[in-house]
Image (cartoon, rainbow, N blue to C red; front, top):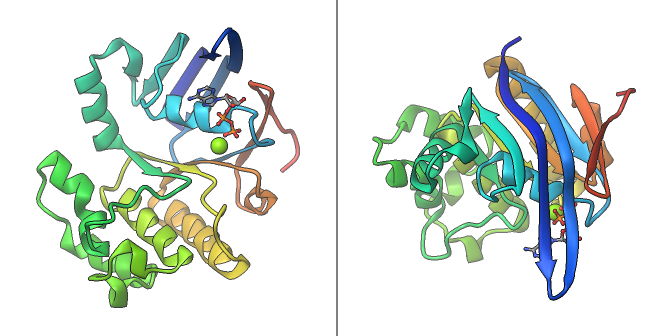
Length: 226
Ligand SMILES: Nc1ncnc2c1ncn2[C@@H]1O[C@H](COP(=O)(O)OP(=O)(O)O)[C@@H](O)[C@H]1O
Ligand SMILES: [Mg+2]
């Protein structure tokens, strides 16, 4: 299988006053096209930092991230943002929906940013599968947590990104909504070969993972068993 993402020896520290927090300690990782990678680990272990570095959002102190062969941190910020918008679908922990935009306009936002025509066929499919059709003209404050989550998922998937990066995607969901989301991830992976990186402390995700890593104090270790 082709590789979509290669991460070589990335490190990242945060400075807080005089103290330094080493959030990532020389982390290396390879992700193949069509793989579901799940990264588990305690709160504060560096999972969100890792995901943001993978997606071009946090510049690491050292190391390389190759996305579809492009060395993300050798690019200008503008070029990196363009590649990110083109290739990465982000599902943020807090969803990052825009309060002033309706469900449908939140979902279309990446297309507006990229200046691309909407893919109305895929849009309809996603609204159906994620059961958001009835909510398309609602605003985020009018939605339940699960509906917000599903809106964030639709937005991430509409562009048909090469890779979806999800930060605690079931963190705010009840069991049923969580199970639905997992079934959806499994389905899009099987049918479309969608690649996923999911960072979470929810061990339910291990059921659908192809590869599991554990993040512990800024280091990533491959888990042997599934
Ligand atoms: N912007 C930041 N400034 C300072 N410290 C940070 C920042 N982001 C994360 N950290 C610290 O880095 C460590 C890893 O955080 P994070 O990547 O968010 O872990 P996780 O997602 O596993 O909870 C934590 O100790 C956290 O406090
Ligand atoms: Mg986190």
